[in-house]
Length: 439
Image (cartoon, rainbow, N blue to C red; front, top):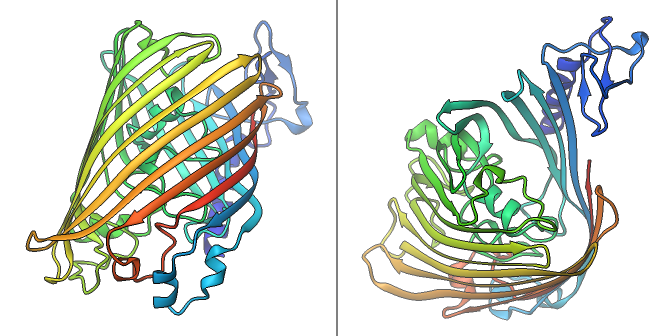
């Protein structure tokens, strides 16, 4: 309830920027953008009796919404279910229900033609997932200042982390039914490495030139809705350094994020990385000395390579990553190091106007070793195949049908490694019908 109240206060605060009893009139252009001053091509949309006042030169409102019907069938995992006293049959059953996978509402208050303050509210309710949250969150809240350095702008606040947003706007455009490989968690409908998410408190320097673009920043490291983000700063002060470096082979780097993949041709090569000290997950305690096999405090590093080529008929992209978690401390029976490796290949074909065929293949592995360096022979090998068909009804609405087929294999008993009974690691088949709305 407290989160709901706080979210309502945040929404009212945003509204108060615009709402005031004044005589200022509002005007709209052909693109639907709202202005406080008249100009050629702008039409008055608000009368004096319902006028709006803002100290910003322009207010821009938008929304992105993903709704869907999902059916997921996990495979049985008798070792885990019996060890935890669960009902084995429910793990082989099919779960079906409606989801609100994302509900973004956003406002940008432009201070001039280039600088602005952005706030994005986020709410999500997914199928049978312990990571779901129906309460509203502030996903982004940052000041953007253009040209703080040559060709470089800065985001300050709850900002984009360097990698996820890039991949979602240049390579994998379907967060509505599956996240990118590095962000996926173990839920009823996904399974993956869960190494980084899309937003965090800090700053991000964003450079754009014709043949090169980059992002580099420092962040708390746990992400915008992690319960332990404040605790990390409370007992350490260590932060996360993250970056992306991209070469734009066809010289369209200044259009980054604004390409229309159904009309434009582009080819990008990228490298990305992260170095985070004293990272905490949501099971962490301050200065924890672990007594379980699930570590909660560690140093994390990620390094990856990515390539994408797009033309109006098709897109093809591929990436490889390597990551390591080094535990801060722990008992001799705890894992001291976890190594991750993975590849992801995705593509789409657009044979007919407004129709897109989607495909993706992921392969990832997690290997653990003990605090003393002894190999635990504890590994998780996962593969994922995704197929989908998308129809763009209008510039605002798209419909997608998709299926994903996830398989994970273990070299040790799952119950011994994942004794909390979490959903991570279940092989599963997931079918989704998705509605995307953008305005």
